[in-house]
Image (cartoon, rainbow, N blue to C red):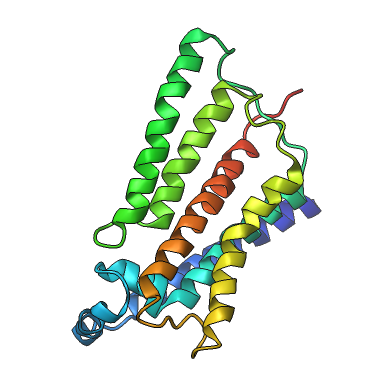
Length: 219
């Protein structure tokens, strides 16, 4: 009885939040083109030539830092619920699947880093690259479940937090020259590319862990 009441209250709360978000969205004012013009005007100072990357990694870098924190918190929640999830491979290892992984995974990594570096001048960037890299890791782990299984949990946890720590570390470093995550023009490009590179690896591993820790366990 208590469980049914709890779930009913949970559904009602979720519905209320949904309705609140809908009302907030409907009440938003029309987009002000002045903001877009402001971004274009200062684009040359951002260190990149793509407006979305400039906003995410320079003008509103703090928002992106917090988003990375949310991704990491979600992983911590998964570990908190049950740190002993296991999964079943989709097939047993054989010459065909091993060859498939050996050919496909390097191409996925190559495409991921292409997306990463192309984000400075067109759509792409760390989040898209991380999603692609995560897909590659998932394929490897499903077909070759013992691959990389010797990695220590401490090493994996270091990779998990490396993106957030590096991002925050850059922000702390910028405090010596101005405001938090406010890059100097001469260093902007280097810092943005460095942040995106570390984020790609860190978020890629985190996203793949979401999937691996969510599917069926070994009985």
